[in-house]
Length: 352
Image (cartoon, rainbow, N blue to C red; front, side, top):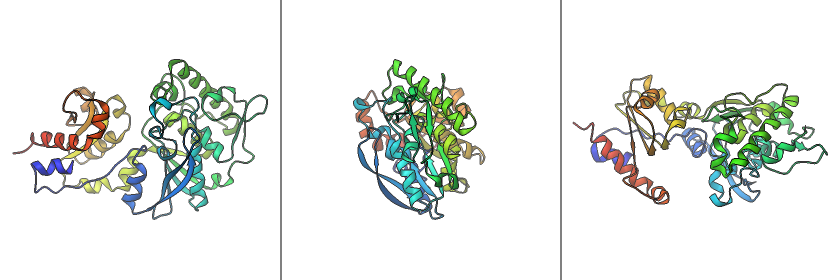
């Protein structure tokens, strides 16, 4: 974006602000933005394979965890994705690593997950045991929750009650139903139509059993369906507060201060579509810019928003960066030059 802007306005003051909304990039945006440092931990990926995952500590001692680092969709090849068996266990291992390091306030970015297990895997890594009617511990994955009869918290990490967890999410879905975790996001994680039905029922059963332990039903809450239900699991068992991921990152980046005196904001996302309206990065940027009357132009690999939706979002306009019919793989490999060229073309419209 900076390179494209320089081609049109070589003398402009350009302030680059890396942002994220709880998914991939959140860890870097928060840690680099605040001047913290990174750590690594050996964890299980969604298939149970051992990997190295990064997490971070901010200068004020807060821990920062990005679910995508341990339980992310990008960690699994598309042909190997299995929404019913994928586990969030590795994210729980990162939470444990942060607790072991002395962090008692932990930010958990939960976008970009490969899982639909309601966070049960992460809770298992922290000592919870999920049992069937024969008192046998269930295997990993959301599909097995259909057989859940009891949750054993005797060995659940006691430090959880003394820590503060904040979930950073970019979606507001409930856990179950037409808008739930399985129906909205299961297919992109490898779920077939019949898998979606099983997972939705399994998450509903999880919510019913969890209500006995948690004392209330968190499944209808906004964000409960985020990251395959990780939002639900952390709210119900870690007393987590769910916040807009982009709002937290904007605050950490002092974005409103950097907006002062700006003439234009350029921002982007992989696809500008209906999901963009529901609290993703661009929605947060537009809300902040609107408060200071700074126009915003969006760029993305795909633009599927009507003029009315652009107005609803607060975008002056939006442009696709793709220069013609292209293979997705080629577009991903050439995203940087495509973006640079698109920014240059867009800014030529405002050059005097």
